[in-house]
Length: 251
Image 1 (cartoon, rainbow, N blue to C red):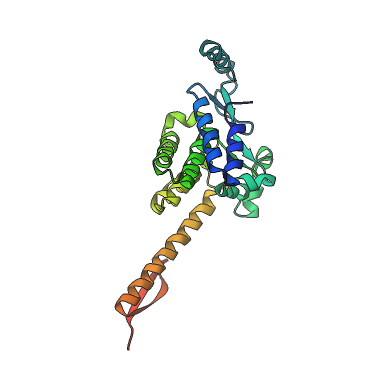
Image 2 (cartoon, one colour):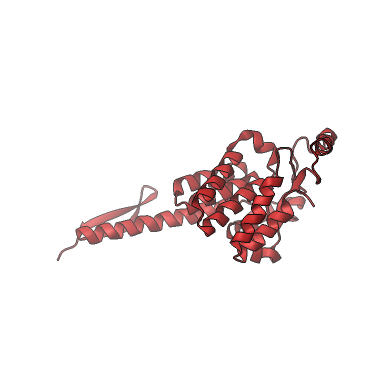
């Protein structure tokens, strides 16, 4: 067993089944185990240095010197479609990341073996799970702490070497901002995700969803203004965008 992936999957099962307190205990255990020497490993994507035997030799050496009883590595966390019941909702979009048949057809042979699943790096997923779990428990201080750790880790360029699914990590961060109702920041991070990969990326779905939310919010505000001041309005297309035209209601 590696340091984190199996335990994170167990925590996800507990969260999705409503056992939030038990999930939080597992997540705290994972965070304790995830020391600074842990090396992320991915079976589907490669990074420079993955084949460097010195890296793994150093991991074994560090284990012996520091008395760690388990390997200092973690796999990515993977959910197949049959595990949708124990997958956080936002990762279900990862299982349907292709917007069109043409986009799906662009996948190479290796991508076809995993892109219908949800796969995420362990540490970003740990902090995301903490965020939604503590939120469900009403522990706001711990939730914000997990949120800060997630953003700090993802935005630190030094950690890029340990992220194999950076676009998915940005999607998790964007979703946190979306849940915080900071839609501008949510779109910012979804666009960061798209800058890493513009096709076969669930961020395309997320951007559309947030834009719909914003349009709905604007329409609700318009209705409120019109009721307050006795106005009517219609939405018209002008100069490539939608604008509202107002007129006074004749009573």
